[in-house]
Image (cartoon, rainbow, N blue to C red; front, side, top):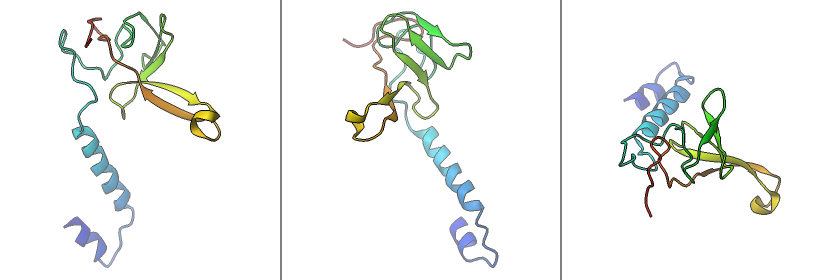
Length: 123
């Protein structure tokens, strides 16, 4: 319906296509499941940083905004982004890894401990 209205009208409303595209992308993104289920011990999700490192269970040293944190034990710097819905580590990949100039790369931080209650997850 929208396709016919925008493609066959007298006045081409070109600026509506990016709005429609972004709206559909946002809806699909919200419907996609998170990469990991909620913690079985406390029931909280991993889409926000807690007090503990998901990799080793150590204390997190948070910045003033609370969006980034670094672990004092395993020294991983991590943050939770809107797009990943889980903790990611941001780093610059070396030229040998990517075959060119250094690129900003993201990888998921392994979740072995709950970030909120420090419960051991998995094996």
